[in-house]
Length: 450
Image (cartoon, rainbow, N blue to C red; front, side, top):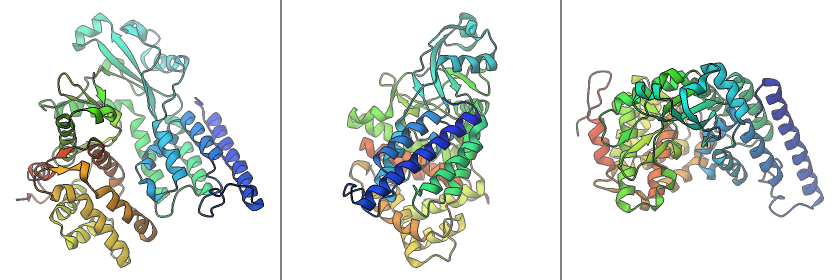
């Protein structure tokens, strides 16, 4: 993995040159009539050839950091709002997990924990068992003296990739130039805002001390929860670039489709409950919806939470208005949806009627699970397809970007909805919503009464 700014700049530059030559070749084929029927379509960018798609995926997965983060952020956009080619790029980047060699890991841990760090472990597996956009994770066993202090022995040691933190700003600038040049994204996605949010979140996620604090906070918030468990931190073996915590057993929820209907309902119900609690009870949310961040333990029935780097709080004024939007959606109140969407900043009040209608329609669709009395069957839902149909209109007619808080918030809520859909879970959404939001206190001291 390239770890200094010069080598990273070289890789972005070589990607741009490769894309340019690929596009030139494709344009020549189309002009000469030698391209395929699909490639000759005027709606398909000359940049999005099969060879260029492969170039993008190969480079971005090797670069990691900002490249993978932006790909993950954009991958929650509905695939029908962009070309199939760029949707494939984002999906392949999201699923990629290449590792850095142990020599680079050694340099980082030596610098962060000292040259004798291995003496703190009874064993340390040099081969990582997981990788993400910011770092990779190694399984280890604590030395006896550390075990006695923390009360457990098996740990996961997350080590940040070298050079990622220092290259965030330059990487994002290079990516933005590349995306603008190649016109890979549709109009109306407000790339500047996405870059700004990605920049802030990357700086958060590269600070493992901040993540350690968030993990500890969630451990306290969920200490008495009957379902969710949080790893315990080994603070003496953690730093700004190394995070050591209790190893959690369980299976990723991306493999949960094969469970019985009862277990799938159980998982979906509690994931939805957690999202609502994070917003309106804790007022503090882990906003990364990656299903690998949730482990279900079949023996205990517990769900372990992992990766707290994207955790954040929200301003009270934002939560007040956001709850009003969701309450209006649950009630099916179009005028209240429009009013509170404008108050929140989704609308300016000067949109064309078609934009306002599309936005309100999509908000009402999102509220549909909470509007249904009793059990809502995510296996027999049309919310996702109905929201998809409104996206092209909103991209075309939107006058303002969404509130910045909603980039991470909607990423988490979308992940929860999509997980419930994937599991075909049957969830008492309205009961969960009312039970949690009835305890929320607005800034003026008011509470919802159902």
